[in-house]
Image 1 (cartoon, rainbow, N blue to C red):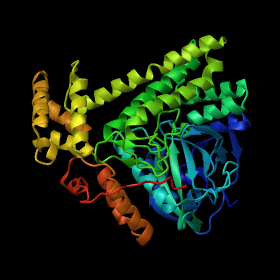
Image 2 (cartoon, rainbow, N blue to C red; image 1 turned 30 degrees about the horizontal axis):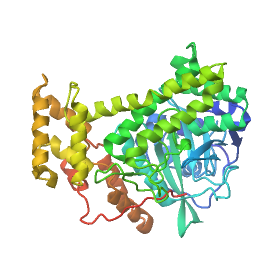
Image 3 (cartoon, helix red, strand yellow; image 1 turned 90 degrees about the vertical axis):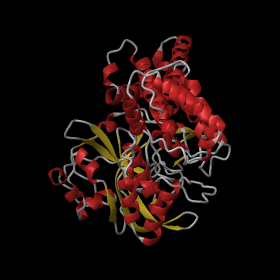
Image 4 (cartoon, helix red, strand yellow; image 1 turned 120 degrees about the vertical axis):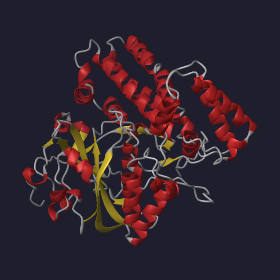
Length: 490
């Protein structure tokens, strides 16, 4: 291993709380060096938030850290163990191609995992090479930063480096490593691993660790493990509602891809919906549509039920009582999700107060959008700016009837029309990472080494609700979108 970079040069302030958990939860490891790393994109605003020096990290020594050729002072590299239900089937998993180098403590006292994704084989690689291609890593960078700009809790991307090596999938690809930043990488699958292969003490230590790290306000609760389950349910209900409100389709909602802290994680086969249809699926491996757009709330509830199962031994000494506590907690998820979603949809329609028939008004609009194959994002954008000539649906008698009901609903509010309009502007993005725009950026980067297309896209996506003239061309769809598929990129 090469020499470690001194803390004061780059601003590293690393801690390693995860290594104090029982050893079954991780494997310590050395980095897997690469031949010729080159930095291709770096997130300066995120680096500043983390208390890191952009100049130092863009140097040869800094790039060596992103490549896994060295580690910063204070790092303790490890791969995390976890399990998970993948498309409903339970299996042993783990960080097969990722290395956690440590937890950065920011100047404001926040703690973030710093993980290298695509950094090489680990004990959990299951025969894979542990590497990643440049396309999938840049894709995660684009989508995760777009999600952050949309106000959706998410892991973020600090940097992508190419490795100077070739990896082999269906074809030969240029290798790359993404530096991922997360509040933590604790997953539902981490608890499933503990329940399946650990002891009661292992499970309890994991739960106590998760509480201390993400929910310290409940540490002194009478039944902190029940409070913990309820807290995770609350965060996930809010998160999934935010996905649905912008038309985001995760694509692979396995239990190992649901975080305990409530952040979106893993941007493999994800995409944003264009034409509104709850049955929309983009992932090439989701043949049955298990993770279709409209199924995401129910799948989240299913995943949370798996978390609840793992906590049964901690919830109560009497198993039957523990099961009842878990069931009661899980039963609250649908209403919590619906409340978050309904609140968000009201905002998208400029509804500041609440009326009992709002859910019907919203459902009727979505029914019309599905019937007329309307673009999800652009429909709400057109309603925001009263551009009712942009969609064939707007000229139909049934929409005219709906529009009259909506306008009457707005008139019943005490708040001004200007307040409603501003609410809609703030909650209806002008731009999302359109699938064809993402592919355009990736093709330019991967095939031509041109990163300017991606950078311009990132700039436009950084303020999705700005509604600027520059964003206008990013709102249009290609004349023939065709069938779009996404892939895991493993």
